[in-house]
Image 1: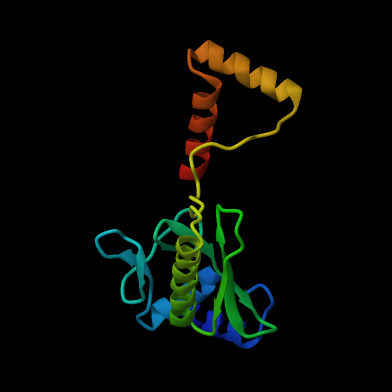
Image 2: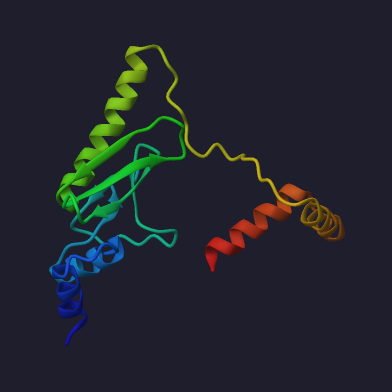
Length: 164
């Protein structure tokens, strides 16, 4: 049995944990895939390949959105991540969820503009991390021993962990 046949069989069994990776693999067998395209890289295109080591996300106008499958409702759904505002979207196909995601971001930006609010900017480059005192001490000592700041040590550790 081919990989495509296994994924089709799994999809037809309506599993609650069918993943976006499985869906894109299956669609790839039929000539579909996704890639950020265009000058700014913020438009999803179902005709090109999409590869993202960090997971499967939609990207548009510097906003990222999750994608999940609801077996019960028979739709894909997601929300914009990295901001406090709740921006959700859904669609019954890959194309539909991409369109609804872009529409949701555009509506959020329009709402902010109409109401004189500054839209939240995701991932500003700083965040708080709470760790145990002993780990904090060890990290500070390791940073000092390497001649770098604690921020640099943490940044290097994060860079390493997402590149593996």
